Image 1 (cartoon, rainbow, N blue to C red):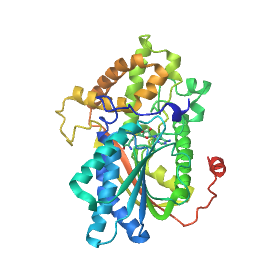
Image 2 (cartoon, rainbow, N blue to C red):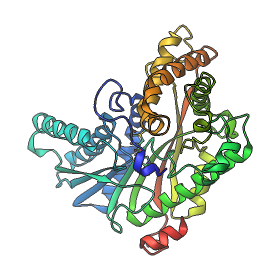
Image 3 (cartoon, helix red, strand yellow):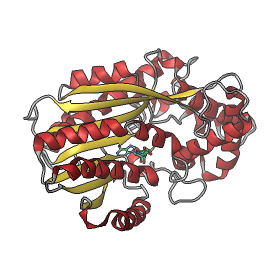
Image 4 (cartoon, protein in one colour):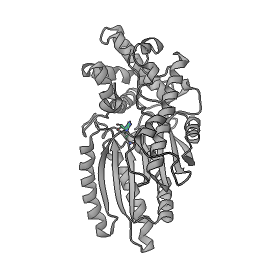
Length: 387
Ligand SMILES: C[S@@+](CC[C@H](N)C(=O)[O-])C[C@H]1O[C@@H](n2cnc3c(N)ncnc32)[C@H](O)[C@@H]1O
C-alpha cells in the first residue's frame, strides 16, 4: 500500500471531519505563537525580504491551516506597523498529500481574506495563497526559495509502514497489533525507529535545499518523553484500538489475517531521537526545543480533576482519532465496520482513562540552516540515493 495514495484525514466540514476535530493540534500551535513571532522577526530583520514565502507542510483541512497562515501574517503586520517601511508581500503554500481536502482550505481562505479586508483595510499585508499537493518526503520547492517552513502534527506519519512489517513477515512479527506494543517483539520498535530515521533525514535534506539561509523551520511533532518505546501515551491509544479490532476478530467481524497484516505508518519519536537525527543529517541545528503536554480529551483542560465523565471523554478522544485514521483503516478493513470499531474504541479509552489522566506529548523544535551552500546537489536522483 502506498501511503501517499490512500492517506488523508476525513474530508469536509461535517461532524466527523478533521476540520471539526482538530483541537489538540490547535492548542499546540497556539502555544508557539510568540516563538513564531520571534522567528519571523529574526528572518525579516536579517533578510529584509520584499516578498516572504511561507509554507505549512501537512496542513490538512480546517481551521488549523488558517491559524498558521494568520499567525504568520499578523506577525509580519505587527512587526512592520511601527517601522513605517513597506511590508513584504506574502506567498503562502498549503502543502499536503494529493488526497487532502484542499477545497476546504481554499474556501476558508476566501472567507479569511474577506474578513481581513473588512477589519484591517488596505494597509494590511498583501498575501497570496496556493495549494501544493505532494509528499514532504521529497522536493517540493526550487532551490533556496522559502523563508519559513511550518509543520504541525504531520511528521510522525511515516512515508510507509516499516519494510520488515510488510508482506509475510508482518503476520508473525506484530501479530494482533497495529503499532509498537509493550509485550511485542523489540524488533518491531527497532524497525519503526529505523523507518523514522530514514524519513526524517530525507525530510531535512529536502528542506535544507529549499530553505533560504537565515530562514527558519518550526516543527511540532507528536512524540513521547525520553523513555523506552513502551511507555508512551499514544502507544496506549493505538493499543486500545488494537484491542477493539481483536475483539471484532474473536466475534468473526474482522478477519484475523487482515488484522495481522495491518500496521500503522506512524512513529512518535523522543526529543533525543529527533535531535540525534538532526545532528547526524547535518544540515540544520536546533535553536529552540521544548515540549508541551495536553490531556487526551481535547475538551478537558483540568489537571487533577478526576470527576470528568469518562464515557464522554472516551467518545471525544475516539472522535478525533477517527477523523485522522478512518480513511486509512477503512481502505484496509472496509468502511462497514468503522462505526462499531470506534464505538468499542471509545469504551476502551474510557476504561483506560478511569485509571489516570493520559496526556499527549508534543515536541516543539525550531531549526536554522548550518551553512549557506547545501552539501549536496539539488537533483531528485541524489536525494533518492540518500533515502
Ligand atoms: C494530523 S494532520 C495535521 C494537520 C495540521 N497540520 C494540524 O496541525 O492540524 C496530519 C497531516 O499530515 C499530512 N501528511 C502526512 N504525511 C505527509 C507527507 N508525506 N507529505 C505531506 N503531508 C503529509 C496528512 O495528510 C495530514 O493531513
